Structures are given as structure tokens and as C-alpha cells.
Length: 275
Ligand SMILES: C[S@@+](CC[C@H](N)C(=O)[O-])C[C@H]1O[C@@H](n2cnc3c(N)ncnc32)[C@H](O)[C@@H]1O
Image (cartoon, rainbow, N blue to C red):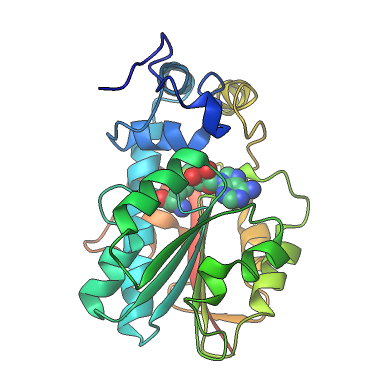
């Protein structure tokens, strides 16, 4: 059995370039989803975030459910290739599992900057020739689009669903639409784009300020909530599927949701098809 230090981190983790002492959003998100791929610093920051904004666990589950529905809709529409940007630590309902339920031949290239996410995904996918994990910064589209894990798995002459779910809000970008345009330009018509981005729908100024304070202690120190128009802009060149850009719980829900519950999404989401 491996030794763990007082952070709860594997004693070898620093050697792999992993900072277990600074809270990390991938591992905090894993904690909110009930996973165990997180360290003491992540759990403490996650609990602090919950004190500031108690709705965060619900936000996480609503977001994850949107991701699942978006993948299923893309797969059912015949798209059999996925590029998952900021894919996170593997958990229940991973993109390749959902896509392959619809089409067993579906291919998924996962991309995440975080070491634990990359390591866990590589372990999970070790025997899966239809999925890959690339550890890269998605703000560097050239690096992502030329990474072997992406180029050897995905055929850019055929439609690809690009997923940017709960990732653009933690990138400190003034023009996220410009970043998404770089990915769009690598895709052929018939490709898809799924996005969710945090929004202030049912969260007070005090709660968002408290959440922001916690984010400042993490490896992704800025939380960029965006309004409807800003999320819409990220879909430039795409035709939105119904019902458009909406609170994420309201995007093709499995059961009808009330306006009140939809607001608790605290995020806008949508899926578009490149024309
Ligand atoms: C909130 S999680 C979302 C995971 C997944 N997309 C989902 O919606 O369930 C955000 C993920 O983005 C990753 N991330 C943050 N900045 C990144 C960057 N510049 N490039 C790639 N991944 C990044 C984090 O490591 C984390 O795993």
C-alpha cells in the first residue's frame, strides 16, 4: 500500500508534477459528484464553497446531467466522434459510456489539463481503443488539435461533437467565442458544439462573491459567469438545436422542470450544429 501524507495525497504525487496542496477544480468537482479522487485541500475548499453557495452540489449534478443529455442527442443524431474539452476526472456517466450506449463504435478524445484527471482517465481507458486522454491546455487549440490522442482517434473530415461543458467559466478569457471559433474552424459541417457556462440565475451577489473568494485559492482563480447573450455568441456559425440556449436543466430535460428548478442550474447551456 502506498504512503499518504497529511494532505491525503499519495506521497509520490509531487514527483509527478501534481500539486496536492492547492485546491483544484477538477478534484473539487469530483468531490461534489461523490468521487474519491481528491485531496484534503480540495475537500476543504469544496466545503468552503458550499458554505458560501449551498447550491453548488445541485449545480454540479444539473451540469453533469446536461452533459449526458447533450452527448446522447449528438450520438442519436449520428455523430460518432467527440472531443471533450475539460473532461474532468472520470466518474459515472462518462462521455464514451453514454455515446457508446447509442453507438458502440463512437470515439471519444478526452482533454484535460489536470494530472489526476489524465491519470484516472488513462487507467480507465487503457483497454479501450475507441477513447483517448490528452493532458493539455484547451486555450491552446493548436496543441489540442495536433495532439496524437486527438489526431490518431478523430477524423476531422467527418462531423465531430465538441464539448465545452463547465470549462469556459473557469478560463479567464475576455473572448471565449474566439477560442471556440478556433475549434469550429477545425470541424466540418454537421459537427456539433455543446456548451454550458455558469450564469447568475438564482445566486445572490453575496454568494457569488463568497464563491469567487474560494476560486481565488484554486489553480483556476477566476470564475466567469456569463449572460445569455455571451453564451449565445460562443455558438457563432452553429444552428442551435431546440430549445436554444437555456438554463441547463431546461435543455431537453427527461422530465418537465419548473422555472424555479431551472434557475437553480445557475448556468446557460445549449447544443448547436455547424452549417
Ligand atoms: C468543472 S470540471 C467539468 C468537467 C466536465 N466537463 C463536466 O462538465 O462534467 C472542469 C474541468 O476543466 C479542466 N480544466 C481547467 N482549465 C483547463 C484548461 N485550461 N485546459 C484543459 N482543461 C482545463 C479542469 O481540470 C476540470 O477537470
